[in-house]
Length: 155
Image 1 (cartoon, rainbow, N blue to C red):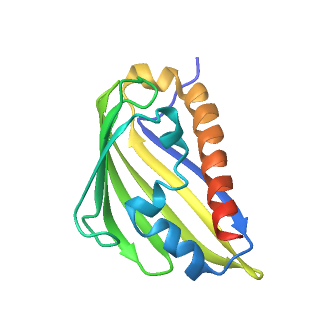
Image 2: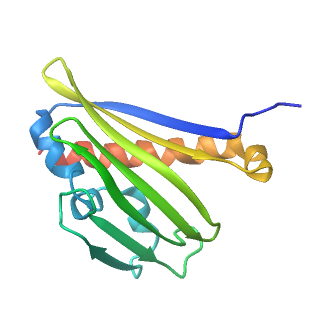
């Protein structure tokens, strides 16, 4: 039997042919993030409510969908370091209650910008069993999101 710890970490990186300042504009607010967020397409009728000051700590959005793949929850910016990183906290209400942190970090890579997107959470025993499936799903979603971001910033 495979044993997994309770902490779950996922990360994916991609190099974009764009200066970090251009990439920063797409990650430094929740409205900008949702322009390339892969989960937004799960439900075009999803209810979205923004609050806080856009592009500042406390910038937040909450979503509510009848589609269980999207569920309901909130994501709030907890830390911003201009042109370097954005860190958020996510609270999930449906289909499963939970909490996670996410970070998007920018670093120079040749003439472009390396974007590293991470997620950290704790998993209960049932979720640990599903970890290989979760890695697969996270990989697909993060790949799609980073490709969406790449298209936006390389225009």
